[in-house]
Length: 540
Image 1 (cartoon, rainbow, N blue to C red):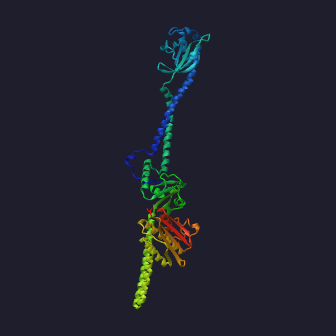
Image 2: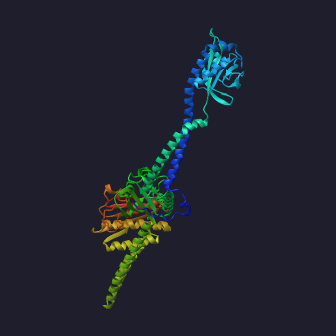
Image 3: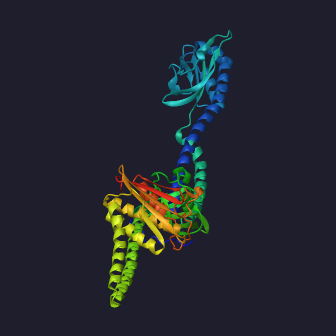
């Protein structure tokens, strides 16, 4: 796969070690650390081996020296530097055993014979020895600033009484002597480790670079930083889901739109409580463009594409846009267009009526012309007066009048329910009422379309701090099995004629109501009965 273009790295990055160089340096440090550890272990083992082997030899030599008859007979009465028999025997045993120290001491601890003349007449260094109790002992002592491994063996006379001590010892090898025996092997280990480490580093670096598209660590870090900045800087929400339905990536805008917790990356979709519709929209099927979905109180537009890496599917990435306010404005614009179309139709109607009046006047039928004018004026005035008397909000009144004219062209009658009354609403509530009333009346008109003598009844009441809108129609009604689904986004019993689909009018109606803390429901009473409750307080 070709290496992605990442631009020229800054000058300071060019001086950094490559990935293979970093791996090699790391492995060299590891090898050196292991070698140092092995060195200390080897030194400790060599000391233990020296003690184990030499203590046996020293003990055997000391036992031989202590058992020599001449030593047993002369040692009790001997004195330092007097007589040559005891020093000769001690030196003979030392040279035969290869020891570095041989000594004979009386019972009182005075050294009377020693391979080191300076020790004569001195007290015997016992250390932790229990030889004076008549027991042989091996261990280390320090004499003349030297650490010596010694064996103490009691010398007994013919009666078995302790008359002295025979000592055989060997000086511990120095650090350099022990290193001299260890370094050759360590050098061999170091050479083999360097060769294996170098080859391993190159192979590992090659594999890692293949997996990282040939980029060095600095370039990867730069890409991650740029990705994070771009991802969290855009206004659209971005969500990536892996094949196991886990959240692989989500930016701040998506967290706000979907109301997910900030630490949701790595969690399963069901762990964050997504609905079945949202789960399907994020994970199912091929590319999906401009899909509308209600998420909580928001109307969201989703665009989903499957993700692939090296020819295999690795999940889905979805972008999200909040279309709640836009859909509300579209609904209001639709109501305005309806009003405009109705006024345009009325313009043609008025033109026809004017032509009729003009013809009657030309024919001299003045009484007929007057009666025709009175009839038209009374019909139009009565509709406006009926609506104006019960609906004080101008926007809602104009919408109802326009819908009444539109219904008349379709052969459907719209009338206000007895007891209807609406005071003037604030700007936000007025917009919400335009959306709710317009959608419910349009839905009712569609339900009675094609039926003879179709009727729609609109009821509006304003009590106890809430506006209640009720729309009844003489259509077939809504089946009980569909009453829970009819307010879901995308559900419609009518075929879609637009790319955006149908089934969002009632969903938007419920969304507007619930956003204000109200509700929207449907019942059946000789036809469909839709009820929407919008509290006066609670508008956003």
